[in-house]
Figure (cartoon, helix red, strand yellow):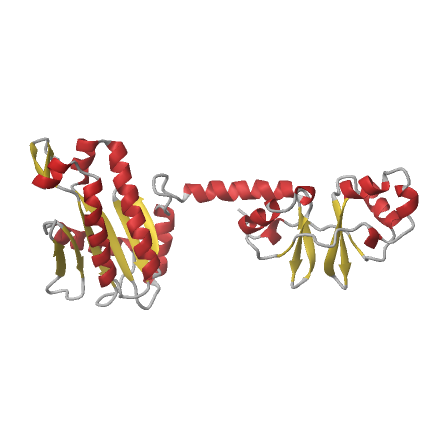
Length: 325
Protein backbone atom coordinates (compact mmCIF):
# COMPACT_ATOMS: atom_id res chain seq x y z
CA UNK A 1 0.00 0.00 0.00
CA UNK A 2 1.33 3.45 -0.94
CA UNK A 3 1.35 6.14 1.77
CA UNK A 4 3.39 9.00 0.29
CA UNK A 5 2.15 10.96 -2.70
CA UNK A 6 5.45 10.54 -4.55
CA UNK A 7 4.96 6.77 -4.61
CA UNK A 8 2.01 7.10 -7.00
CA UNK A 9 3.30 10.02 -9.10
CA UNK A 10 3.82 9.56 -12.83
CA UNK A 11 6.16 11.50 -15.07
CA UNK A 12 4.62 14.18 -17.27
CA UNK A 13 6.20 16.40 -19.94
CA UNK A 14 7.68 19.69 -18.81
CA UNK A 15 8.07 22.82 -20.87
CA UNK A 16 9.40 26.34 -20.44
CA UNK A 17 7.01 29.29 -19.92
CA UNK A 18 8.42 30.65 -23.18
CA UNK A 19 7.31 27.60 -25.19
CA UNK A 20 4.68 28.28 -27.84
CA UNK A 21 1.12 27.01 -27.49
CA UNK A 22 1.51 25.12 -30.74
CA UNK A 23 4.19 23.00 -29.05
CA UNK A 24 1.73 22.10 -26.27
CA UNK A 25 -0.81 21.06 -28.89
CA UNK A 26 1.78 18.75 -30.46
CA UNK A 27 2.42 17.14 -27.07
CA UNK A 28 -1.29 16.54 -26.44
CA UNK A 29 -1.81 15.13 -29.95
CA UNK A 30 1.17 12.77 -29.50
CA UNK A 31 -0.09 11.60 -26.07
CA UNK A 32 -3.89 11.19 -26.23
CA UNK A 33 -4.11 9.95 -22.59
CA UNK A 34 -2.05 12.80 -21.18
CA UNK A 35 -4.15 15.24 -19.14
CA UNK A 36 -1.60 17.96 -18.40
CA UNK A 37 1.84 19.46 -18.92
CA UNK A 38 4.05 21.03 -16.25
CA UNK A 39 5.68 24.39 -16.80
CA UNK A 40 9.11 24.62 -15.18
CA UNK A 41 12.04 26.98 -14.78
CA UNK A 42 15.37 25.31 -14.01
CA UNK A 43 13.46 22.18 -13.11
CA UNK A 44 11.24 23.94 -10.59
CA UNK A 45 7.50 23.71 -11.40
CA UNK A 46 5.86 27.12 -11.69
CA UNK A 47 2.63 26.42 -13.55
CA UNK A 48 0.38 23.78 -15.10
CA UNK A 49 -1.49 23.44 -18.37
CA UNK A 50 -4.40 21.01 -18.31
CA UNK A 51 -5.64 19.53 -21.61
CA UNK A 52 -9.31 20.42 -21.10
CA UNK A 53 -8.65 24.07 -20.27
CA UNK A 54 -6.09 24.38 -23.08
CA UNK A 55 -8.57 23.30 -25.75
CA UNK A 56 -11.33 25.37 -24.21
CA UNK A 57 -9.21 28.48 -24.73
CA UNK A 58 -7.88 27.78 -28.21
CA UNK A 59 -11.20 26.33 -29.34
CA UNK A 60 -13.01 29.67 -29.33
CA UNK A 61 -13.75 31.55 -32.55
CA UNK A 62 -10.45 33.43 -32.60
CA UNK A 63 -8.59 31.41 -29.97
CA UNK A 64 -6.51 29.31 -32.34
CA UNK A 65 -5.25 32.32 -34.24
CA UNK A 66 -4.77 34.32 -31.05
CA UNK A 67 -2.74 31.77 -29.07
CA UNK A 68 -1.01 29.26 -31.32
CA UNK A 69 2.09 31.30 -32.09
CA UNK A 70 2.34 32.86 -28.66
CA UNK A 71 3.95 31.67 -25.37
CA UNK A 72 2.10 29.36 -22.98
CA UNK A 73 2.52 31.95 -20.21
CA UNK A 74 -0.68 33.53 -21.57
CA UNK A 75 -2.85 30.53 -20.73
CA UNK A 76 -1.07 28.54 -18.02
CA UNK A 77 -2.35 28.14 -14.46
CA UNK A 78 0.24 29.86 -12.27
CA UNK A 79 -1.12 28.51 -8.97
CA UNK A 80 -1.28 24.71 -9.29
CA UNK A 81 -1.32 22.45 -6.24
CA UNK A 82 2.34 21.50 -5.63
CA UNK A 83 3.33 19.05 -2.88
CA UNK A 84 6.53 17.34 -1.77
CA UNK A 85 7.19 13.66 -2.51
CA UNK A 86 6.89 12.68 1.17
CA UNK A 87 3.52 14.33 1.79
CA UNK A 88 0.97 11.73 2.98
CA UNK A 89 -1.67 10.80 0.41
CA UNK A 90 -4.40 11.48 2.99
CA UNK A 91 -3.18 15.06 3.43
CA UNK A 92 -2.92 15.66 -0.33
CA UNK A 93 -6.46 14.33 -0.79
CA UNK A 94 -7.79 16.99 1.57
CA UNK A 95 -5.82 19.74 -0.18
CA UNK A 96 -6.99 18.59 -3.61
CA UNK A 97 -10.65 18.41 -2.59
CA UNK A 98 -10.49 21.92 -1.11
CA UNK A 99 -9.61 23.45 -4.47
CA UNK A 100 -12.11 25.49 -6.45
CA UNK A 101 -14.53 23.59 -8.67
CA UNK A 102 -12.69 24.88 -11.72
CA UNK A 103 -9.42 23.24 -10.58
CA UNK A 104 -10.86 20.23 -8.79
CA UNK A 105 -9.71 17.68 -11.40
CA UNK A 106 -6.34 19.22 -12.20
CA UNK A 107 -3.14 17.25 -11.73
CA UNK A 108 -1.38 17.51 -8.38
CA UNK A 109 2.26 18.33 -9.11
CA UNK A 110 4.83 16.43 -7.03
CA UNK A 111 8.35 17.68 -6.30
CA UNK A 112 11.47 16.09 -4.88
CA UNK A 113 14.06 18.48 -3.46
CA UNK A 114 11.99 21.28 -5.02
CA UNK A 115 12.41 19.91 -8.56
CA UNK A 116 9.61 18.42 -10.64
CA UNK A 117 9.21 14.71 -9.92
CA UNK A 118 5.85 13.98 -11.55
CA UNK A 119 2.10 14.43 -11.18
CA UNK A 120 -0.89 12.59 -9.77
CA UNK A 121 -4.38 12.57 -11.25
CA UNK A 122 -7.38 13.02 -9.00
CA UNK A 123 -8.59 9.56 -10.00
CA UNK A 124 -5.38 7.87 -8.82
CA UNK A 125 -5.34 10.04 -5.72
CA UNK A 126 -8.86 9.04 -4.65
CA UNK A 127 -8.34 5.35 -5.44
CA UNK A 128 -5.27 5.22 -3.21
CA UNK A 129 -6.95 7.31 -0.53
CA UNK A 130 -9.86 4.87 -0.43
CA UNK A 131 -7.45 1.95 -0.09
CA UNK A 132 -5.65 3.66 2.79
CA UNK A 133 -8.96 4.32 4.54
CA UNK A 134 -10.02 0.70 4.12
CA UNK A 135 -6.74 -0.62 5.52
CA UNK A 136 -6.82 1.88 8.39
CA UNK A 137 -10.35 0.77 9.28
CA UNK A 138 -9.15 -2.83 9.57
CA UNK A 139 -6.72 -1.69 12.29
CA UNK A 140 -9.41 0.09 14.33
CA UNK A 141 -11.96 -1.19 16.80
CA UNK A 142 -15.38 -0.51 15.22
CA UNK A 143 -17.01 0.47 18.54
CA UNK A 144 -14.50 3.04 19.78
CA UNK A 145 -12.47 3.84 16.64
CA UNK A 146 -9.30 3.12 18.63
CA UNK A 147 -6.37 1.08 17.27
CA UNK A 148 -6.92 -2.66 17.64
CA UNK A 149 -4.68 -5.65 18.25
CA UNK A 150 -2.45 -5.28 15.16
CA UNK A 151 -1.41 -1.78 16.20
CA UNK A 152 -1.25 -2.75 19.88
CA UNK A 153 1.25 -5.53 19.17
CA UNK A 154 3.42 -3.12 17.18
CA UNK A 155 3.41 -0.60 20.02
CA UNK A 156 4.20 -3.21 22.64
CA UNK A 157 7.24 -4.30 20.65
CA UNK A 158 8.29 -0.63 20.31
CA UNK A 159 7.80 -0.14 24.06
CA UNK A 160 10.15 -2.99 24.94
CA UNK A 161 12.89 -1.24 22.95
CA UNK A 162 12.60 1.93 25.06
CA UNK A 163 14.96 2.70 27.94
CA UNK A 164 11.88 3.32 30.11
CA UNK A 165 8.34 2.12 29.51
CA UNK A 166 5.08 1.57 31.33
CA UNK A 167 2.16 -0.41 29.97
CA UNK A 168 -1.24 0.17 31.56
CA UNK A 169 -3.71 -2.69 31.16
CA UNK A 170 -7.21 -1.41 31.85
CA UNK A 171 -10.47 -3.31 32.10
CA UNK A 172 -13.89 -3.10 33.76
CA UNK A 173 -14.91 -5.30 36.68
CA UNK A 174 -18.43 -6.79 36.80
CA UNK A 175 -19.15 -5.55 33.27
CA UNK A 176 -20.97 -8.75 32.29
CA UNK A 177 -23.55 -8.17 35.04
CA UNK A 178 -24.12 -4.65 33.74
CA UNK A 179 -24.58 -5.92 30.18
CA UNK A 180 -27.03 -8.60 31.37
CA UNK A 181 -29.02 -6.06 33.38
CA UNK A 182 -29.11 -3.07 31.03
CA UNK A 183 -28.51 -4.63 27.61
CA UNK A 184 -25.76 -4.49 25.02
CA UNK A 185 -26.64 -1.01 23.80
CA UNK A 186 -26.01 0.49 27.23
CA UNK A 187 -22.95 -1.72 27.63
CA UNK A 188 -21.53 -0.30 24.40
CA UNK A 189 -22.25 3.20 25.67
CA UNK A 190 -20.26 2.50 28.84
CA UNK A 191 -17.31 1.18 26.82
CA UNK A 192 -17.38 4.26 24.60
CA UNK A 193 -17.47 6.53 27.67
CA UNK A 194 -14.50 4.65 29.11
CA UNK A 195 -12.63 5.11 25.83
CA UNK A 196 -13.21 8.87 25.99
CA UNK A 197 -11.82 9.05 29.53
CA UNK A 198 -8.76 7.07 28.47
CA UNK A 199 -8.19 9.24 25.39
CA UNK A 200 -7.71 12.31 27.57
CA UNK A 201 -5.37 10.41 29.88
CA UNK A 202 -3.29 8.96 27.05
CA UNK A 203 -2.97 12.45 25.57
CA UNK A 204 -1.67 13.84 28.87
CA UNK A 205 0.78 10.97 29.19
CA UNK A 206 1.96 11.38 25.60
CA UNK A 207 1.20 7.72 25.04
CA UNK A 208 -0.56 5.27 22.76
CA UNK A 209 -4.10 4.08 23.54
CA UNK A 210 -5.43 0.84 22.09
CA UNK A 211 -8.66 -1.15 22.45
CA UNK A 212 -7.86 -4.81 22.92
CA UNK A 213 -11.55 -5.73 22.67
CA UNK A 214 -14.66 -5.80 24.83
CA UNK A 215 -13.92 -3.85 28.01
CA UNK A 216 -10.11 -4.23 27.77
CA UNK A 217 -7.83 -1.32 26.89
CA UNK A 218 -4.09 -0.61 26.94
CA UNK A 219 -1.93 2.51 27.22
CA UNK A 220 1.79 2.43 26.34
CA UNK A 221 4.13 5.23 27.50
CA UNK A 222 7.92 5.71 27.47
CA UNK A 223 8.28 6.85 31.11
CA UNK A 224 7.13 5.97 34.63
CA UNK A 225 4.97 9.05 35.36
CA UNK A 226 1.60 7.30 35.38
CA UNK A 227 0.37 7.44 39.01
CA UNK A 228 -1.56 10.72 38.88
CA UNK A 229 -3.06 9.65 35.58
CA UNK A 230 -4.24 6.33 37.03
CA UNK A 231 -5.91 8.21 39.87
CA UNK A 232 -7.63 10.63 37.47
CA UNK A 233 -8.87 7.74 35.30
CA UNK A 234 -10.38 6.06 38.35
CA UNK A 235 -11.94 9.28 39.61
CA UNK A 236 -13.40 10.18 36.21
CA UNK A 237 -14.79 6.68 35.67
CA UNK A 238 -16.42 6.46 39.09
CA UNK A 239 -18.02 9.86 38.56
CA UNK A 240 -19.67 8.65 35.34
CA UNK A 241 -21.42 5.69 37.00
CA UNK A 242 -24.44 7.80 37.96
CA UNK A 243 -25.21 8.25 34.26
CA UNK A 244 -25.38 4.49 33.67
CA UNK A 245 -27.40 3.12 36.59
CA UNK A 246 -30.95 3.56 37.85
CA UNK A 247 -31.23 5.37 41.17
CA UNK A 248 -32.24 2.19 42.99
CA UNK A 249 -29.09 0.39 41.87
CA UNK A 250 -26.93 3.37 42.80
CA UNK A 251 -28.49 3.44 46.24
CA UNK A 252 -27.99 -0.26 46.97
CA UNK A 253 -24.57 -0.42 45.21
CA UNK A 254 -25.32 -3.71 43.44
CA UNK A 255 -27.49 -5.40 40.83
CA UNK A 256 -29.07 -8.83 40.94
CA UNK A 257 -27.61 -10.88 38.10
CA UNK A 258 -26.27 -14.32 37.29
CA UNK A 259 -22.64 -14.90 38.09
CA UNK A 260 -20.40 -16.92 35.77
CA UNK A 261 -21.69 -20.10 37.41
CA UNK A 262 -25.28 -19.20 36.55
CA UNK A 263 -26.26 -18.39 40.12
CA UNK A 264 -28.21 -15.16 40.76
CA UNK A 265 -26.44 -13.00 43.34
CA UNK A 266 -25.73 -9.44 44.35
CA UNK A 267 -23.01 -8.19 42.01
CA UNK A 268 -21.28 -4.85 42.70
CA UNK A 269 -21.51 -1.91 40.32
CA UNK A 270 -18.93 -1.75 37.55
CA UNK A 271 -15.48 -0.55 38.62
CA UNK A 272 -12.26 -0.03 36.72
CA UNK A 273 -8.96 -1.86 37.26
CA UNK A 274 -5.53 -0.76 36.04
CA UNK A 275 -2.53 -3.08 36.10
CA UNK A 276 0.74 -1.26 35.38
CA UNK A 277 3.75 -3.17 34.05
CA UNK A 278 7.11 -1.36 33.80
CA UNK A 279 10.72 -2.28 33.08
CA UNK A 280 12.04 -0.72 36.27
CA UNK A 281 12.90 -4.03 37.89
CA UNK A 282 13.09 -6.56 35.07
CA UNK A 283 13.62 -6.97 31.36
CA UNK A 284 10.84 -8.18 29.07
CA UNK A 285 11.85 -10.05 25.93
CA UNK A 286 8.41 -10.75 24.47
CA UNK A 287 4.79 -9.65 24.42
CA UNK A 288 3.95 -12.92 26.16
CA UNK A 289 6.19 -11.95 29.09
CA UNK A 290 4.41 -8.61 29.37
CA UNK A 291 1.00 -10.23 29.20
CA UNK A 292 1.92 -12.80 31.84
CA UNK A 293 3.07 -10.10 34.25
CA UNK A 294 -0.04 -8.02 33.58
CA UNK A 295 -2.27 -11.03 34.31
CA UNK A 296 -0.56 -11.45 37.69
CA UNK A 297 -1.02 -7.78 38.57
CA UNK A 298 -4.63 -7.74 37.31
CA UNK A 299 -5.47 -10.65 39.59
CA UNK A 300 -4.17 -8.65 42.54
CA UNK A 301 -6.05 -5.57 41.34
CA UNK A 302 -9.36 -7.39 41.03
CA UNK A 303 -9.11 -8.73 44.56
CA UNK A 304 -9.58 -5.16 45.77
CA UNK A 305 -13.10 -3.85 46.20
CA UNK A 306 -13.93 -0.93 43.93
CA UNK A 307 -11.82 0.83 41.31
CA UNK A 308 -8.07 0.47 41.81
CA UNK A 309 -4.66 0.27 40.24
CA UNK A 310 -1.68 -1.96 40.99
CA UNK A 311 1.90 -1.42 39.86
CA UNK A 312 5.30 -3.02 40.33
CA UNK A 313 6.96 -0.19 42.25
CA UNK A 314 7.74 -2.64 45.04
CA UNK A 315 7.72 -6.24 43.84
CA UNK A 316 7.66 -7.61 47.38
CA UNK A 317 4.68 -5.50 48.43
CA UNK A 318 2.51 -4.48 45.52
CA UNK A 319 0.79 -1.19 45.99
CA UNK A 320 -2.88 -0.61 45.28
CA UNK A 321 -5.12 2.41 45.62
CA UNK A 322 -8.78 1.84 46.37
CA UNK A 323 -11.42 4.49 45.78
CA UNK A 324 -14.73 4.09 47.64
CA UNK A 325 -17.84 4.00 45.46
